[in-house]
Length: 113
Image (tube, rainbow, N blue to C red; front, side, top):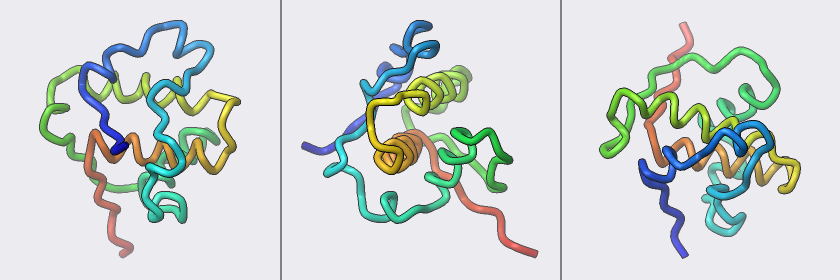
């Protein structure tokens, strides 16, 4: 089954899920493309959020359906609720959260000088 995420899905993350975590929108391992399992800009962002390190440099553009003013905060809540989960293996969580982020926005990495 193909993984999909809607704006309503993002908005449905509640305070309890933010505080105690959820796996509700974490894609199944088999639904995650190989490029996310191997690592890319989206998984680098997920890892930075997980470890509390500096976010990668680049530009973020929200995709159609996620362009409203509240979408960034909703994405932040959703990512943080999923990144806190102890359920999935770490590799699944990082790849899955990276893939989740890619369904909401396009990230273009900054070019090295």
